[in-house]
Image (cartoon, rainbow, N blue to C red; front, side, top):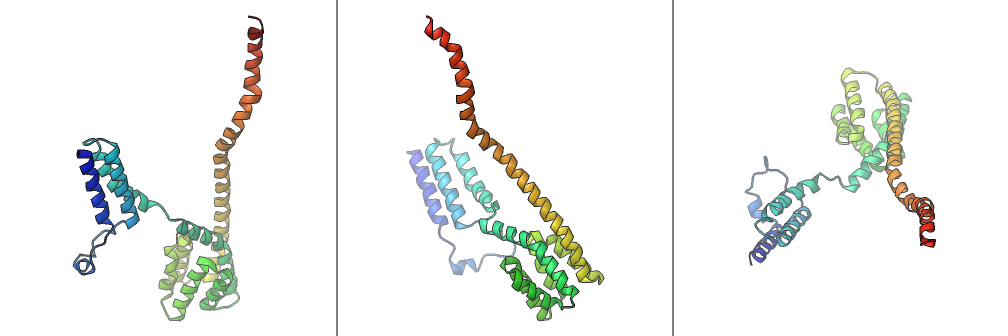
Length: 237
């Protein structure tokens, strides 16, 4: 009876979390210091896990794991990076060395930064091209160059490039020379990252390959040896 009551209570709580606060009441809530609430799907998963723990583990022993799962599962899920974000960052990291080289070449040829950014954005396309197009648009509208280039800080692969460009704009150094040095550094860092990734794949593939070859090793070496040792005892009682 107690288990059924607790499971029904958890199910009711799960149903309550599926509905958001009404709009008129949400206006009265403070928004300056409030923490962002976890997505509805994360709360649903947490509530379902809490219900399962209450049903599987007899109370009162299941109360603590259910409460811990209800509060910890949304936090753990929120820390997971979406696959779209990973693909976006990987695409930006792959296009970054070539993009910096093209920007340096355009600036060295005498193109203004806005035209250079627009030309490279059209050639590169993808998420990095969209980011460069937005920077060019802001520069065309007369935005402060440091504020316009600060959009690169939002992308982790472009953080080093954004800091170098910021130092160049602050000190008044030619941006083309800064980009040339960045192109070399970014290309070397990209090669180093690719090398580390290849070594990681090699080390991770060792265990699956070993498990694939283990049955063949047992059948071709260990089983014949054991059979050869047991044949005399089996044929001569």
